[in-house]
Amino acid sequence: MKGWQYFSFNTLPVSPWRNGGGETREIISFPPGKSEFDWRASIATIAQDGPFSAFPGIDRSITLLSGEGVYLQANPDVNHRLDTTGEPFAFSGDIAFSARLLGGVTTDFNIMTRRACCAAQVKAAREALRITRENGGVVYVISGVWRLPDGTEISAGEGGYWSEPATQQGEDFVNLVPLTHPDHCLLLWASITD
Image (tube, rainbow, N blue to C red):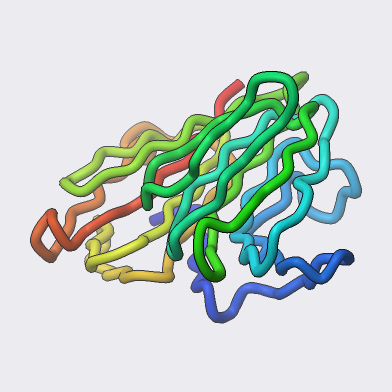
């Protein structure tokens, strides 16, 4: 697939949090090499209770990948249990949350977009999925095995991203097909739009 950059969880660079409460594995920060991103995708490991930093001007989406999840709270009226694998939760980065683990260590898929320039939509799929090539996007396999149009197979802990729209007709969408039973397949697709 043209423009597709493969990645796996195990080979992503790891950045421990300053507060010692977890670590982040960055998938992509776009545009590359800039200190201020337009959009960013990562996987976080949360190892202990603690705060979620505020990111003014940023919209966020977090999706549980593994573990029992976390309870997110922000005064005066945000109380959310992130405890269902593959179910995205979108919120404003202007809000500083506190997070309390519901059990042991969890991992979460995160998308952040700068509100002034782009937006993200995160979807989960268990069956064949047609993804459009918009301004950018990330695909991540939570479980099962999925086939790309060129025959490449990706499985749990693997994925790919692209950072530019398709340049030719026929490259503006991609079909992903599960090779295992839908009960054992789960994939996330985060699309970046204007």
